[in-house]
Image 1 (tube, rainbow, N blue to C red):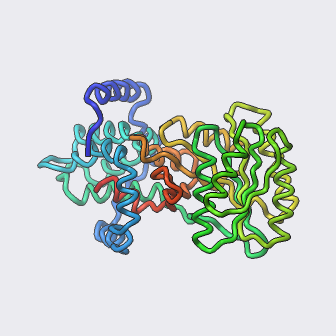
Image 2 (image 1 turned 30 degrees about the vertical axis):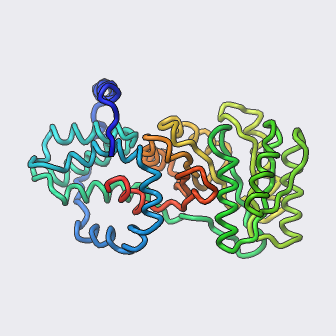
Image 3 (image 1 turned 45 degrees about the vertical axis):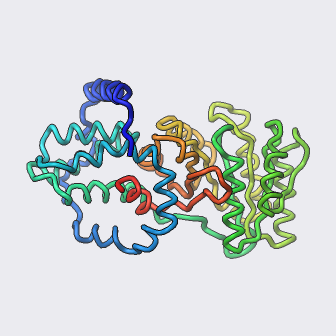
Length: 355
């Protein structure tokens, strides 16, 4: 792994020190009760279970895609080498390295406080490392992983996000993955505002062999969504993926259009949209948290597609997003190919960071 440049690291540490003085360690905001560390043996069993999956093709692919983020996490991993104890200096370094890895203040302080409560004055050994890994995995775990399919009629998955986040390519990758899983997939090209958006999505659908419902640029997005719902029901599609106009969370008129599409598909198909995925660009780091918070206020998002993990060292922001916003990461983009969208698995993700 390659660490981040010393000049950048020192600048970030200075910022962290300043913010720490301003807000304190936030220990009073972490629950005041004593925390008992998880059974490390149980953690070991969980980590090694399904070894073929963890060390197989998917693990190798995700590990490669997280190369830059893993480089930043080197600072965390290196803390568990050498002879030392869990003291104030160690806890301060752990805090700094987690923040440098974009884990976020709230999530970082929870981990640091729990390590302090469970291991203060003990030797820093493999058990402390495994405990930190377990804390990171627990933050990302969510019972609503994957897509929840409706028992009758097409399952509607609505996609939202800002322009440039990788929304269009993520739709193509998701459609391709679902098709490979044996689903009959239809795409609704409701991003009629951005120039060439419909054409771009059409090319992707042709490339992956997925059907598409579209109209001319400038058409009413809600009308496209209506027609797509009718076609999905009439021709018995398993999944309808609804693209929406890329928008900033500050663009009120476009956010209202998003709400309108949400209402239209709900009238056409009971319970729709069954999933609303927010596409976030991982290269934006902590800014992705603000986007997620604002989109969640407008539409009931059910999960996140985190893109461009192969091109950033800020993949640690996934912990801050989950901890602060409460939305599970459903899929991650780890490359530019149409097959480079993987279902998010916390065990594999954390194992790759520490590998």
